[in-house]
Amino acid sequence: MNDAPTRSLPNDDVTAVSKAAAGAVLTIDLGAIRENYRRLKAKLGSVRCAGVLKADGYGLGAAQVASALMREGCDIFFVALLAEGIALRKTVGAGPDIYVLNGLPPGSEPEALAAGLCTVINSGVQLKAWRAAARGAGRRLPAAIQVDSGMSRLGMAPAEVEAVTKDFGALDGIDVKYVMSHLACADEPRHPANEQQRMEFERLRAMLPAAPASLANSSGIFLGPSYHYDLARPGAALYGINPTPGAANPMLSVLRLEAKVAQTRSVEKGAGVGYGHAYHAEGPLSLATISFGYADGWLRRSASAAWFEGVRLPFLGRVSMDSIVLDISALQPGKLREGDLVELLGPSQSVDDAAGHAGTIGYEILAGLGARFHRRYVNA
Ligand SMILES: *Cc1c(COP(=O)(O)O)cnc(C)c1O
Image 1: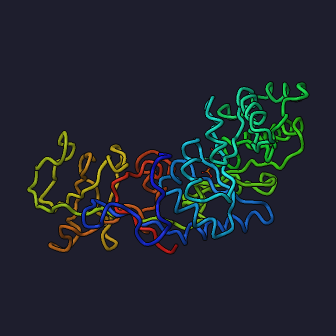
Image 2: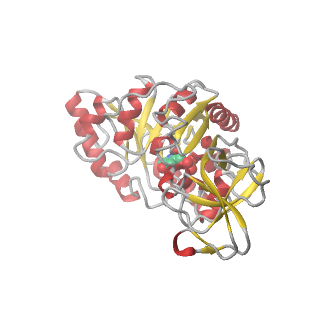
């Protein structure tokens, strides 16, 4: 990953896969991502707003998304892995702060330093290693300290935070830029864990040297100002995933995914369709097979549909690796032809809708989007 050539900056088409050669076209609206950032900023007032770019910007292209957000003044990014941070540094240049959420693997501190990354310290072990790196470098090194306020995933446990208060030199050489934590249930505004975590965050950060604080992810921003602190860390909402499930989506949709028709056919009543003959035609049907399947990140268990000019075309039978069969009987004969594109994600079916049909969340749909699409970036 870190050896990948630097990608060109956003323009209409940065992909290596031509539209003619691809089975599907993914269009990413960078203007909509910028608008979503502005909407979150408007909710946050004077609180700073970072951009979370882990998993290649939730599958949409960390380099392109970072460049779009920087045009809105965003200068702090979070990735999950050191490798992602190194790759991102190459595309964004020296300016923005980049934090590695999962912390640094032991022994990788020199690589992080060379790339000018800030780490997130999640454990006493990581704290010691960063302190040693600072000693070696002969200067103070920036970091965020993550405390576990009740998710039991990443971050220093309360006992480790208490140990820091007792060890006079524990933070020597560490420039604590933020004290942060992460919410487990922010997408459920009435969940009691939200306020419990906020109170625990207050208790833990009071034990550490005074530093700006950060707690809210996308949904956390919508829990209200008491969750905003000094820096918010939205990911999903930037990419159009609804941060307020159950209520109208306050964000713009940012992508469109279209798959190409490989062939069409007519079948008689009783014809078995796809692997395992999981479907049998209940009467004569018109079918279209699209060049798109689970290798493109569309889950095999997904019972869903594609759309063509506003007409719903249900999936029939199983999702294959590289193909899905659609029932196109609702269209005029000859209307849909080989090479035409049908919509899988976009105005007719949001990422959250598609996730609902697959029994998952929009995050998993985006992060799983395949690598063989023709990608277009628009409204840069
Ligand atoms: C992924 C992540 C975020 C962003 O969460 P969204 O729900 O996508 O907004 C923020 N903080 C941490 C620690 C994360 O892991």
